[in-house]
Every structure is written in C-alpha cells, then in structure tokens.
Length: 232
Image (tube, rainbow, N blue to C red):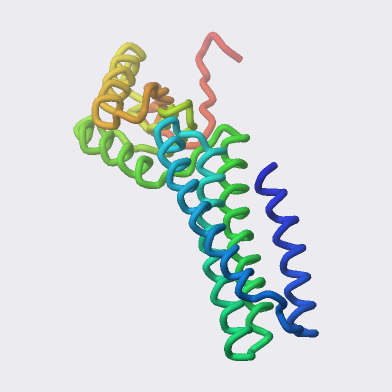
C-alpha cells in the first residue's frame, strides 16, 4: 500500500514539475524555502537512521521501506535546496522543475524496490542469491560422494529467519531408508552452515529409474512400463 501510494505521489510531482519546466516562474520567498528544505532534510535523515536500526533489528519490511523512503526524502530535500538555490541566485528557473523530476525519480525507485520485495513475500518467496548459492555449494561439496546434485533451492521468509525447500537429485538405486537418512543429514548440514535458515525441507528426486528385468537405466522424465507373465 505504501509503495502504490508513492507511485501516485511520484506521478503528481512529475506532472507538476513538467508543467513548471514548460512554463517556468520566479520562486517567491527563496530564502524561507531553503530554510524549510534544510530543516526537512535534517529531520528526515535523523528519522531514517533511527527507523533503519529498528527495521534491521526486527527484520520488518514495512519499516525498511519507510526508512528507505525517509532517506530518499532527505536526499530529495537536499536536491530541492540546490535547485531552488540555482533558480533564485543564478536565474535558471528550469532548475526548480528539474529538481522536482529528480525527486519523482527517487520516489519511483523506492516504490519499485518495495513492490518487488512485497510481491515476493505475498507468494511466499524470497530472492536472496547469496544464500541460495551458499546452500547449493554446501550440499554439493559435503555430499559429493553421494552422486547428489541440487536441482533448485526455494527460500521463504519467516520472521527474522528463513525456511528452505531444497530439491535434489539422488541415485535411484538407493533404498528408501538411505534416502531418508541422507535427507536428514542434508537438513542438519544446511542448518549448521547457514544459521539464518531455521528449517529445511529436502525433496529428493530420482536421477534415474532402474529396470532390473532388462538390466538398463531409464533416463529422467521417462515412464517405466513393467510387464511380467502374471500381468497383462
């Protein structure tokens, strides 16, 4: 909701800035305007750093979004200060409109990041390539002698920790009990090497389906039709 609201605000600011660019006008009370912008910048940045500390402590996306917005707000006030300074002191009236467009760009950038992360959470997903690569590397290096390959690693946030769903290819000749023990070992290894993952679900997939009757291995994705003298 905050991101969608910022999109609307950004569109309004950009529209008015474009109108000022086409029809520039003299800024009234430039000194007072710059004083207000300086005060707004200081308050926004102070508030942003305080909120960022709380957001990182409790891993709350809403507060992180608000903190980023406050940082951009403080930066936008600085941009507004210099645009007013240039427009009033150097006589370049279009500087004020250009500053407004830059501020609108700041707002759009915050909105994009917030919408992206919020959308991932809504579908129970989490985009963190660093942890994904760490999980894959940990599993494949630790169980290299098991002819094991990681197919995919799916992450989802759960408060300040994460949950992982790891799909692996294993030898189809292994008995079910060995697969269960292997899955348990993989889960324990992931949790010990990646503390941010509280729970890991291991989904084994057979890398090949053996056919004992014909003494051959069926490739992945094929269907196995079994016949015997007792079946028609």
